[in-house]
Length: 316
Image (cartoon, rainbow, N blue to C red; front, side, top):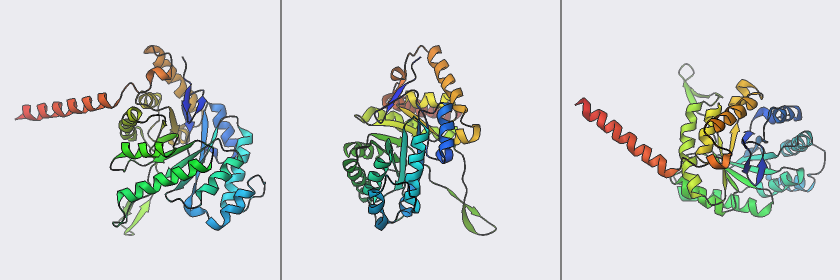
Protein backbone atom coordinates (compact mmCIF):
# COMPACT_ATOMS: atom_id res chain seq x y z
CA UNK A 1 0.00 0.00 0.00
CA UNK A 2 1.26 3.45 -0.93
CA UNK A 3 0.38 5.91 1.85
CA UNK A 4 2.61 8.70 0.54
CA UNK A 5 1.05 12.09 -0.16
CA UNK A 6 1.87 15.52 -1.52
CA UNK A 7 1.18 18.51 0.71
CA UNK A 8 2.39 22.07 0.06
CA UNK A 9 4.49 20.61 -2.78
CA UNK A 10 6.29 18.25 -0.37
CA UNK A 11 6.32 14.54 -1.14
CA UNK A 12 5.65 13.01 2.28
CA UNK A 13 5.91 9.30 3.16
CA UNK A 14 2.55 9.44 4.94
CA UNK A 15 -0.15 12.03 5.66
CA UNK A 16 0.43 12.33 9.43
CA UNK A 17 1.87 15.66 10.61
CA UNK A 18 2.57 16.74 14.18
CA UNK A 19 0.52 19.94 14.36
CA UNK A 20 1.34 23.23 16.06
CA UNK A 21 1.83 22.55 19.75
CA UNK A 22 4.35 21.47 22.39
CA UNK A 23 5.47 18.39 20.42
CA UNK A 24 8.27 20.38 18.77
CA UNK A 25 9.26 22.62 21.65
CA UNK A 26 12.72 21.08 21.78
CA UNK A 27 14.96 19.32 19.26
CA UNK A 28 14.70 16.16 21.39
CA UNK A 29 10.90 16.16 21.22
CA UNK A 30 10.98 16.86 17.49
CA UNK A 31 13.34 13.94 16.95
CA UNK A 32 11.09 11.66 19.00
CA UNK A 33 8.09 12.60 16.86
CA UNK A 34 10.09 12.03 13.67
CA UNK A 35 11.25 8.60 14.86
CA UNK A 36 7.64 7.70 15.67
CA UNK A 37 6.63 8.30 12.05
CA UNK A 38 5.57 11.94 11.67
CA UNK A 39 5.99 13.08 8.07
CA UNK A 40 6.45 16.75 9.04
CA UNK A 41 6.30 19.06 12.05
CA UNK A 42 4.49 22.37 12.55
CA UNK A 43 6.12 24.51 15.22
CA UNK A 44 4.04 26.36 17.78
CA UNK A 45 2.78 29.74 16.64
CA UNK A 46 4.55 33.05 17.06
CA UNK A 47 1.75 35.49 17.89
CA UNK A 48 1.36 38.89 16.30
CA UNK A 49 1.14 40.48 19.74
CA UNK A 50 4.53 39.03 20.70
CA UNK A 51 6.41 40.77 17.93
CA UNK A 52 7.61 44.34 18.19
CA UNK A 53 7.57 45.72 14.67
CA UNK A 54 10.51 48.03 15.44
CA UNK A 55 12.71 45.00 16.20
CA UNK A 56 11.82 42.90 13.17
CA UNK A 57 14.11 44.49 10.59
CA UNK A 58 17.31 44.00 12.55
CA UNK A 59 16.31 40.43 13.45
CA UNK A 60 15.63 39.57 9.83
CA UNK A 61 19.05 40.89 8.86
CA UNK A 62 20.83 38.76 11.48
CA UNK A 63 18.67 35.65 11.09
CA UNK A 64 21.77 33.50 10.60
CA UNK A 65 23.17 34.58 13.97
CA UNK A 66 23.11 32.25 16.98
CA UNK A 67 22.36 35.09 19.40
CA UNK A 68 18.93 34.80 20.97
CA UNK A 69 17.47 38.16 22.06
CA UNK A 70 13.72 38.62 22.32
CA UNK A 71 10.80 36.40 21.40
CA UNK A 72 11.43 36.38 17.66
CA UNK A 73 15.14 35.67 18.07
CA UNK A 74 14.34 32.80 20.42
CA UNK A 75 11.88 31.36 17.91
CA UNK A 76 14.44 31.55 15.12
CA UNK A 77 17.05 29.89 17.29
CA UNK A 78 14.61 27.11 18.16
CA UNK A 79 13.78 26.67 14.48
CA UNK A 80 17.44 26.34 13.54
CA UNK A 81 18.09 23.74 16.25
CA UNK A 82 15.04 21.66 15.30
CA UNK A 83 16.09 21.73 11.65
CA UNK A 84 19.48 20.38 12.68
CA UNK A 85 17.85 17.59 14.72
CA UNK A 86 15.43 16.17 12.14
CA UNK A 87 15.29 15.31 8.44
CA UNK A 88 11.56 15.82 7.92
CA UNK A 89 10.11 19.20 6.84
CA UNK A 90 9.66 21.76 9.60
CA UNK A 91 6.96 24.38 9.15
CA UNK A 92 7.15 27.68 11.04
CA UNK A 93 3.86 29.14 12.24
CA UNK A 94 2.63 32.68 12.80
CA UNK A 95 -0.66 33.68 14.40
CA UNK A 96 -2.20 36.97 13.40
CA UNK A 97 -4.76 38.83 11.32
CA UNK A 98 -3.10 42.02 10.08
CA UNK A 99 -0.23 42.67 7.68
CA UNK A 100 1.93 44.08 10.48
CA UNK A 101 5.58 42.96 10.44
CA UNK A 102 4.94 39.56 8.87
CA UNK A 103 6.76 40.19 5.62
CA UNK A 104 10.06 40.62 7.43
CA UNK A 105 9.24 37.82 9.88
CA UNK A 106 8.57 35.51 6.94
CA UNK A 107 11.95 36.39 5.45
CA UNK A 108 13.60 35.65 8.81
CA UNK A 109 11.90 32.25 8.93
CA UNK A 110 13.08 31.52 5.41
CA UNK A 111 16.67 32.46 6.23
CA UNK A 112 16.57 30.36 9.42
CA UNK A 113 15.71 27.24 7.42
CA UNK A 114 11.93 26.79 7.64
CA UNK A 115 10.55 24.55 4.91
CA UNK A 116 7.13 26.22 4.82
CA UNK A 117 5.03 28.72 6.69
CA UNK A 118 1.64 28.12 8.30
CA UNK A 119 -0.29 31.35 8.70
CA UNK A 120 -2.88 30.91 11.44
CA UNK A 121 -5.51 33.57 10.72
CA UNK A 122 -6.87 33.78 14.25
CA UNK A 123 -9.35 36.59 14.80
CA UNK A 124 -12.59 36.87 16.73
CA UNK A 125 -14.75 39.47 14.98
CA UNK A 126 -16.35 41.58 17.73
CA UNK A 127 -16.38 45.07 16.19
CA UNK A 128 -19.90 45.78 14.85
CA UNK A 129 -18.46 48.50 12.60
CA UNK A 130 -16.18 46.07 10.78
CA UNK A 131 -17.72 44.26 7.82
CA UNK A 132 -17.08 40.70 6.72
CA UNK A 133 -15.68 42.03 3.45
CA UNK A 134 -13.16 44.18 5.29
CA UNK A 135 -11.99 41.28 7.45
CA UNK A 136 -11.62 38.86 4.56
CA UNK A 137 -9.88 41.33 2.29
CA UNK A 138 -7.38 42.11 5.02
CA UNK A 139 -6.54 38.42 5.31
CA UNK A 140 -6.26 38.02 1.55
CA UNK A 141 -3.88 40.98 1.31
CA UNK A 142 -1.81 39.56 4.16
CA UNK A 143 -1.44 36.26 2.32
CA UNK A 144 -0.68 38.02 -0.95
CA UNK A 145 2.02 40.15 0.65
CA UNK A 146 3.72 37.23 2.38
CA UNK A 147 3.67 34.90 -0.62
CA UNK A 148 5.18 37.61 -2.81
CA UNK A 149 7.92 38.35 -0.28
CA UNK A 150 9.12 34.79 0.43
CA UNK A 151 9.74 31.65 -1.58
CA UNK A 152 8.37 29.27 1.06
CA UNK A 153 4.99 27.65 0.43
CA UNK A 154 2.35 29.22 2.68
CA UNK A 155 -0.65 27.44 4.19
CA UNK A 156 -3.55 29.48 5.57
CA UNK A 157 -5.09 28.01 8.71
CA UNK A 158 -8.69 29.16 9.04
CA UNK A 159 -11.59 29.15 11.43
CA UNK A 160 -14.97 27.86 10.20
CA UNK A 161 -16.67 31.20 10.88
CA UNK A 162 -16.93 32.74 7.43
CA UNK A 163 -20.14 33.54 5.57
CA UNK A 164 -18.85 32.04 2.33
CA UNK A 165 -15.89 29.85 3.21
CA UNK A 166 -15.57 28.38 -0.27
CA UNK A 167 -15.28 31.82 -1.86
CA UNK A 168 -12.84 33.01 0.81
CA UNK A 169 -10.62 29.95 0.46
CA UNK A 170 -10.59 30.45 -3.31
CA UNK A 171 -9.49 34.07 -2.82
CA UNK A 172 -6.66 32.94 -0.56
CA UNK A 173 -5.58 30.42 -3.19
CA UNK A 174 -5.54 33.13 -5.86
CA UNK A 175 -3.50 35.31 -3.48
CA UNK A 176 -0.83 32.62 -3.37
CA UNK A 177 -1.77 30.22 -0.58
CA UNK A 178 -0.42 26.75 -1.39
CA UNK A 179 -2.57 25.08 1.25
CA UNK A 180 -5.63 25.51 3.44
CA UNK A 181 -5.78 24.05 6.97
CA UNK A 182 -9.21 23.31 8.48
CA UNK A 183 -9.62 24.51 11.24
CA UNK A 184 -8.02 26.40 14.10
CA UNK A 185 -9.71 26.13 17.50
CA UNK A 186 -10.70 29.21 19.49
CA UNK A 187 -10.38 28.90 23.23
CA UNK A 188 -13.93 28.80 24.59
CA UNK A 189 -14.75 30.57 27.87
CA UNK A 190 -16.99 29.17 30.58
CA UNK A 191 -18.52 31.12 33.48
CA UNK A 192 -17.34 30.60 37.04
CA UNK A 193 -20.54 31.20 39.02
CA UNK A 194 -18.63 31.59 42.27
CA UNK A 195 -16.28 34.27 40.97
CA UNK A 196 -18.79 35.60 38.41
CA UNK A 197 -16.20 35.84 35.66
CA UNK A 198 -15.24 34.14 32.45
CA UNK A 199 -12.63 31.40 32.70
CA UNK A 200 -10.80 29.57 29.93
CA UNK A 201 -9.46 26.05 30.00
CA UNK A 202 -7.28 24.09 27.59
CA UNK A 203 -9.17 21.04 26.43
CA UNK A 204 -8.24 18.24 24.07
CA UNK A 205 -10.17 17.89 20.85
CA UNK A 206 -12.37 14.85 20.24
CA UNK A 207 -13.51 12.90 17.20
CA UNK A 208 -16.88 14.68 17.24
CA UNK A 209 -15.14 17.88 16.12
CA UNK A 210 -14.13 16.18 12.89
CA UNK A 211 -17.63 16.32 11.39
CA UNK A 212 -17.55 20.03 10.55
CA UNK A 213 -14.10 19.60 9.04
CA UNK A 214 -15.26 16.70 6.87
CA UNK A 215 -18.02 18.85 5.41
CA UNK A 216 -15.66 21.60 4.35
CA UNK A 217 -12.97 19.23 3.13
CA UNK A 218 -15.54 17.73 0.78
CA UNK A 219 -16.58 21.19 -0.41
CA UNK A 220 -13.14 22.72 -0.88
CA UNK A 221 -11.59 19.63 -2.45
CA UNK A 222 -14.11 20.03 -5.26
CA UNK A 223 -13.62 23.79 -5.69
CA UNK A 224 -9.92 24.62 -5.22
CA UNK A 225 -7.63 24.34 -8.21
CA UNK A 226 -4.19 23.64 -6.77
CA UNK A 227 -4.07 24.37 -3.05
CA UNK A 228 -3.73 21.23 -0.96
CA UNK A 229 -5.86 20.64 2.13
CA UNK A 230 -4.97 19.61 5.66
CA UNK A 231 -7.28 18.82 8.54
CA UNK A 232 -6.49 19.98 12.06
CA UNK A 233 -8.62 18.98 15.03
CA UNK A 234 -10.72 15.89 15.65
CA UNK A 235 -8.40 13.20 14.28
CA UNK A 236 -7.73 10.61 16.99
CA UNK A 237 -7.97 7.27 15.21
CA UNK A 238 -7.11 5.66 11.91
CA UNK A 239 -10.78 5.83 10.95
CA UNK A 240 -10.81 9.58 11.59
CA UNK A 241 -7.82 10.01 9.29
CA UNK A 242 -9.41 7.84 6.58
CA UNK A 243 -12.58 9.94 6.66
CA UNK A 244 -10.55 13.12 6.26
CA UNK A 245 -8.61 11.72 3.31
CA UNK A 246 -11.63 10.45 1.38
CA UNK A 247 -13.18 13.90 1.87
CA UNK A 248 -10.14 15.53 0.29
CA UNK A 249 -7.35 15.98 2.85
CA UNK A 250 -3.76 15.58 1.70
CA UNK A 251 -2.42 15.81 5.24
CA UNK A 252 -3.69 15.14 8.73
CA UNK A 253 -2.39 17.32 11.55
CA UNK A 254 -2.53 15.91 15.08
CA UNK A 255 -1.85 17.40 18.50
CA UNK A 256 -4.37 16.23 21.11
CA UNK A 257 -4.18 12.55 20.13
CA UNK A 258 -0.39 12.57 20.36
CA UNK A 259 -0.38 14.39 23.68
CA UNK A 260 -2.85 11.86 25.09
CA UNK A 261 -1.34 8.69 23.59
CA UNK A 262 2.28 9.62 22.94
CA UNK A 263 4.15 9.89 19.63
CA UNK A 264 4.02 6.08 19.24
CA UNK A 265 0.34 6.50 18.38
CA UNK A 266 1.46 7.51 14.89
CA UNK A 267 2.58 4.00 13.97
CA UNK A 268 -0.79 2.62 15.08
CA UNK A 269 -2.60 5.08 12.81
CA UNK A 270 -0.42 4.16 9.86
CA UNK A 271 -1.19 0.48 10.45
CA UNK A 272 -4.94 1.17 10.64
CA UNK A 273 -4.79 3.21 7.43
CA UNK A 274 -2.85 0.52 5.58
CA UNK A 275 -5.13 -2.28 6.76
CA UNK A 276 -8.26 -0.37 5.72
CA UNK A 277 -6.81 0.36 2.29
CA UNK A 278 -5.90 -3.27 1.81
CA UNK A 279 -9.35 -4.45 2.89
CA UNK A 280 -11.05 -1.98 0.54
CA UNK A 281 -8.61 -2.58 -2.33
CA UNK A 282 -7.10 0.87 -2.49
CA UNK A 283 -3.50 0.95 -3.66
CA UNK A 284 -2.77 4.59 -2.86
CA UNK A 285 -4.11 7.67 -1.10
CA UNK A 286 -4.61 9.30 -4.48
CA UNK A 287 -7.27 6.69 -5.25
CA UNK A 288 -9.06 7.49 -1.99
CA UNK A 289 -8.77 11.24 -1.81
CA UNK A 290 -11.94 13.18 -2.55
CA UNK A 291 -14.18 10.18 -3.18
CA UNK A 292 -16.76 11.74 -0.88
CA UNK A 293 -17.28 15.07 -2.62
CA UNK A 294 -19.75 17.90 -2.28
CA UNK A 295 -22.37 16.24 -4.52
CA UNK A 296 -22.45 13.12 -2.36
CA UNK A 297 -22.51 15.19 0.83
CA UNK A 298 -25.53 17.19 -0.32
CA UNK A 299 -27.37 14.08 -1.49
CA UNK A 300 -26.87 12.46 1.91
CA UNK A 301 -28.04 15.63 3.65
CA UNK A 302 -31.23 15.73 1.59
CA UNK A 303 -31.83 12.03 2.26
CA UNK A 304 -31.38 12.60 5.99
CA UNK A 305 -33.91 15.45 6.01
CA UNK A 306 -36.38 13.32 4.09
CA UNK A 307 -35.91 10.49 6.58
CA UNK A 308 -36.59 12.77 9.53
CA UNK A 309 -39.66 14.19 7.77
CA UNK A 310 -40.98 10.67 7.22
CA UNK A 311 -40.36 9.69 10.85
CA UNK A 312 -42.02 12.83 12.15
CA UNK A 313 -44.99 12.41 9.82
CA UNK A 314 -45.31 8.74 10.71
CA UNK A 315 -45.67 9.55 14.39
CA UNK A 316 -48.77 11.60 13.68
